[in-house]
Length: 272
Image (cartoon, rainbow, N blue to C red; front, side, top):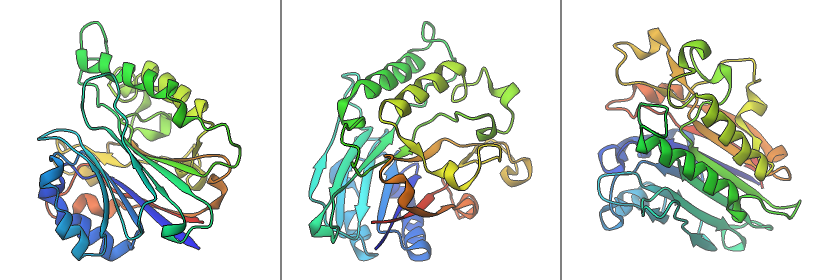
């Protein structure tokens, strides 16, 4: 049975709930994972989501900043949220789909919004960058992200705010000192990935030697012509589940939708 999961940094869900509806209509994902929702839970547009086919929602938000959510056509067996660095910001939510969702074996979905890290890649000078590095360290140590069961079925998605490969950025040389592609960030993301033996599902479809972007800055006068992108959004899966991925689509067209996010959705279909 196919299960399609979309991940998207929506950059304000209340402002762009119409774009989420457009994604739902055109790609029909079973689950939509959103980041940077920028709204407290009591103001999340749950009624709108239910109207366009997603009656089940797990949300973890706060006023004006950050925030993550998972919208689903299918019910959840469990919902959990994890805090990092004792700051109280809303950057993680997790759901488990099981028999109530029609799955014979449970599937856990982690949705992350890792801190962007500011502009200066020096933790001594930039508190935001220091927070980002500490967040990555803490996530790497969190046991829930490295299940010991070799048959575990888990997916980790979200705006991880790091473009790890040289082909994940428009210019490796020019971005080595730019937050999101610095060696220390890449090293820490690799440690997080290795801790859970997570498989980079997107790169199973697009080889590592090919360019792949999910984000284009608002600052570009013509983002498509300049094509100075980065791959900040990721889909990982546990080794037992990764081989079930049968299709992947980076919805590049969404960057040209009306009042777009600077990120585009990534849609992956698994056989569950």
